[in-house]
Image (tube, rainbow, N blue to C red):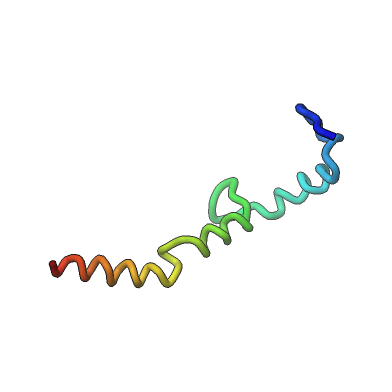
Amino acid sequence: MYISNPSQHNLIGADKIFSTLPKILSPKYEGALIPIELAHKIASISDYPSAHILKLFTESRGSF
């Protein structure tokens, strides 16, 4: 059933979810959740092998 403006008691398990959120906040970034921080770190070009490829590409472009 669709509820356009649900309250907390309409959401199954919301109290458990909301009580867990403070436990998974990142100490590195204010207000960030650790799972999101980890996903961002994996996708970040600076932390991924593609950074080396990008560096090689930019160095080769300088020789033209």
